[in-house]
Image 1 (cartoon, rainbow, N blue to C red):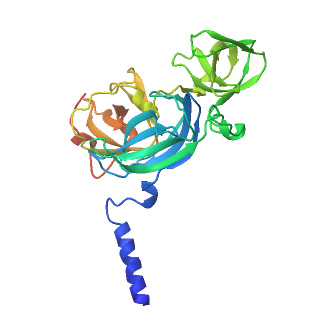
Image 2 (image 1 turned 90 degrees about the vertical axis):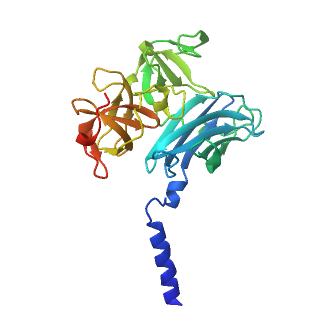
Image 3 (image 1 turned 180 degrees about the vertical axis):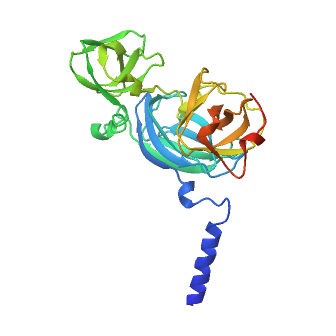
Length: 310
């Protein structure tokens, strides 16, 4: 009997160690929090790419639906197989409909290489205060940790949107608030001051390190808001970042920064620059150039063996 048990345990261990076999933890994303209003939602989750749908990438879809099943938000995404990433967005607007009934559900769906739904990887539900009362403590728990604190320099008018019309309310001078987002040009800051939505103020009215604020997202995968470099063909291998590295539209520090490859992320590589100082990679569906010296080449791949593509 003992021999039989040991045999089963050994067989299970051998199966788990087979190449390409994902662990159970890799299969299930961790949704840490999800909050919904009648116009926006906030979510934070961590997940790992585990199914090779095509060229070393795992395809997934993010969906938000209300209690009637109405689709409020949908976004397709890709990530490198075995790459572990965290998404954390606050106050992302619904793009398809307005919720009519609680609960509101955020789902991460597994999709195949043709973007067809295969199954539900994870989901989390929340009630919106505009549809039913909920605890204010729970309601805003996801907003404040990623923000930056600062003080109003003077009496400050509040705006619903950057460069929009004032909403008829103001903040007194010397009050402390938490900034959540800034505009790309750094002239406006989104604050949490209470209520269901963020409000905007002029950055000059705040004593706050605004460079520490994120840009307001239009997607869950913020790096996919930009248009990256053109990919010349199939990836030739992969490289792993030894630091968090800036990604640029062209192989020069003078070109626009279009994203960042985080430390320890493994990304597909497609070629090198003529001087071999840069490599063309793809991270989260966006292609761009990164400095070759900050990456480790995997599986025997060498920089010199890559074709010159830029």
